[in-house]
Length: 346
Image (tube, rainbow, N blue to C red; front, side, top):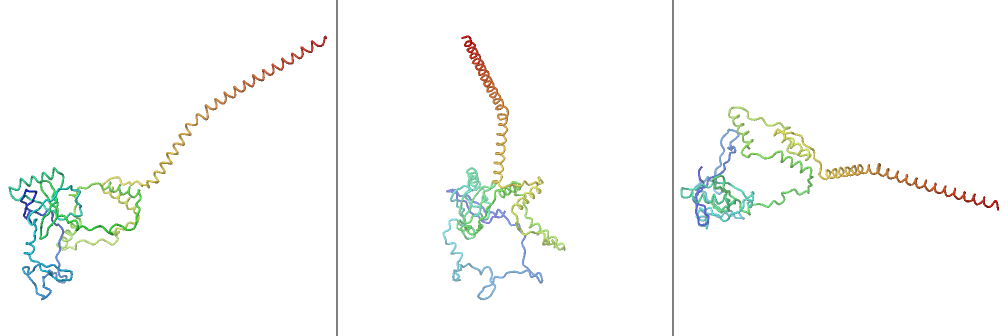
């Protein structure tokens, strides 16, 4: 790979000669502008606004446009004279946890290659130190005439650097979130969780640019004398409108399961509040049934036996009292008769 910048990593008093190599490349299909009437290539000419003459690259310089439209010429000598310690150095300023870097700051990516045999030892030292610390290095460097912020990390056995935007280049998300208050139901969250679980994980290396593939196939078809790819009929696309969120979520889960060859049955989820109430009702019903069942033997058998015994005891007592009363009455009558018989001879 061709290097785009040569310099050194400044790691304290250690200097590591390196080459900067692009870690990414664009695979998008590019087009040229043509004249639609005859197919001729359309090119841009650099023309001076004052005299209307075309100028060469050697005649073109730099200028800063002031707020009132005034052009302030800036020469390469002016920029070279500026104090820029990172002009040829990637200066490490700190080591931080990777989680402290906001992904919004991520910019271009580069590989840092050791430049020469003497650079191998300090390069390996920095690489292994980054691995063992489980941290990344924050650095400042200059590229294409401006100072930039970078993050160094280890990728396989190579030190990679991500260009970072400066913190003041990140916009605050003001006015981006929905302004209308929205309530999300528990059932909707449950379906969203089910959809996330169904989609699961993916090997990112298997993902492909389907649009680019379609463009290349269309170009190949036209180059072979064909008509390219027929446009889709108007009825094929829905425009992304969601009428019923619950229905859309359930359909998404079903489609994801079918795509993965799994069971496509989707259980209808009810709000958790309703489920709790139903559970409470079932528990109360079970409790009532249990009480009723446990109360039956006591109320129908044992109390009845006790009651019958009490009645029999009461009846015996009543009979005994009645017998005693009869005996007392008979004894009294017998006494009165004997007394009358004694009185008659007198």
